[in-house]
Amino acid sequence: MKAVVSSSSKAADHKHLVLDQRGLDAARQSLDDGAVTPSYGPWRDDVVKLLNDALATELVCVLRYKRHYFTANGVESPAIADEFLVHANEESGHADRIAERIVQLGGEPDFAPGHLLERSHAAYDESTDLQAMVRANLIAERIAVESYRQMIALIGDKDPTTRRMLEDILSDEEEHADELKDWLGH
Image (cartoon, rainbow, N blue to C red; front, side, top):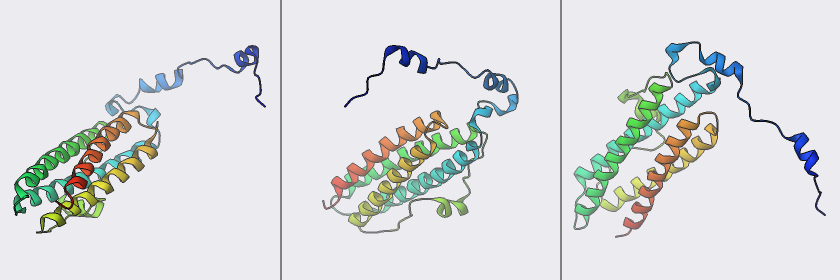
């Protein structure tokens, strides 16, 4: 049986959409923080850490794809190697966007080579066999897809700008994974 709610009780439960004046007043302070207003609350540092780990992942992916691009050989290798280079360049673009967002949030992007593998979700790979390269890259892309999905869920409405950026990058990573799946077994 459905409960019927009268329009008068709906009106009584209705809350108006009103901006929080205290939040607006707080935004007038700490101008050195740029776009980072107090409404970011305690999440800003967590978001910067998530983004620095994503940055490390993207940079390791660039290096892995570049190595595979230069070392791929075999009859099918020219076409696949060219796609490795395309993916490397796209991953580099992701890294740039992530680094820029870290700076916008008042953080420091960590490009230190010694820290990359420690923080990367995906592994580096030195395969010499073309199919092993494709497989290693597919695994890395699947890990990227999963890590971006989890970051998007964690960030939710805490930082809509970062969430939208991650959703955009996730779309590229899913496309990469689909392409690699198609190359597996060729």
